[in-house]
Length: 54
Image (cartoon, rainbow, N blue to C red; front, side):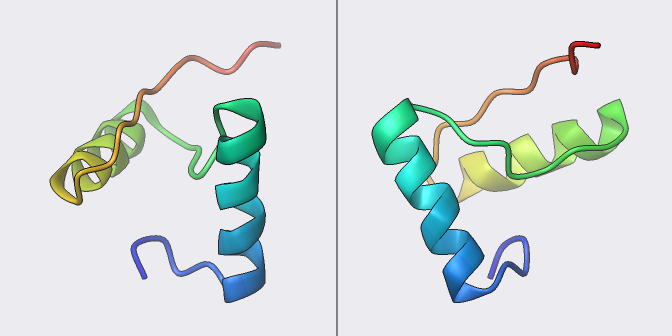
C-alpha cells in the first residue's frame, strides 16, 4: 500500500483515473507532493503535481 488507502478507496481512485484520466491521491506541501510523485514514478506509475486552484 503506497498511500495506505483501503481497498474501497483505492478502487474508487483507480476508476477515477480510468474514466476521467486523473485522480488526486495526495495533497499537502510542495515537498510532500514532490516526494509522492517520486514514489509513484518508482512504481512505474505516471504522476504529476499541480498547485491547488482556489
